Image 1 (cartoon, rainbow, N blue to C red):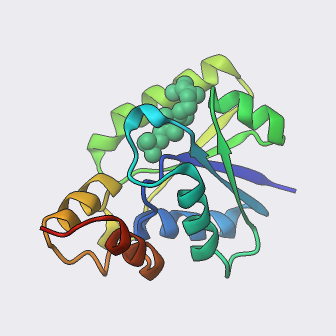
Image 2 (cartoon, helix red, strand yellow):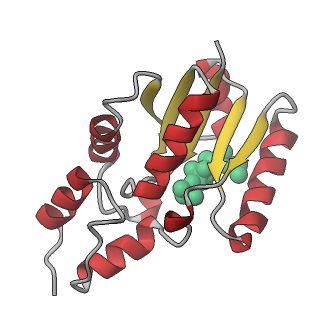
Length: 160
Ligand code: PNS
């Protein structure tokens, strides 16, 4: 069984994330979406809420499992028996940060490989941070997030 871990904050899940997850399921038998438990980032949605949204939006992909983790990613990977990390890269600007993380994870566990995947072109500028900002300011993000996420944004955020 080929298993890959797709880690991130997912606050909230965007269509860009969903696109990477779908592409991942074409390469791996199991794609474990792993939500980082990082309260330091003052997230909009709790870890449980983020996991539920991911689970709902990936219902049509039986290969997808939703997990959460704290501490080191490599330790989580050891626990679940996976050695491939999937990360999406949108623009060159993502590369430096991703390179650092991939090499640090390799330093921590030489058996861990990181695979970078490209999202569909129409999502190359989409990020959770921008989605939240634009939504808060009354902009239309309906094309950028799954309908369930849009609903949760509406329920959570007062649009100015
Ligand atoms: O969606 P994000 O916020 O860019 O995801 C970052 C994430 C969760 C992949 C990264 O912060 C992470 O793996 N954190 C766990 C802590 C860790 O293992 N750090 C050392 C490796 S960089």
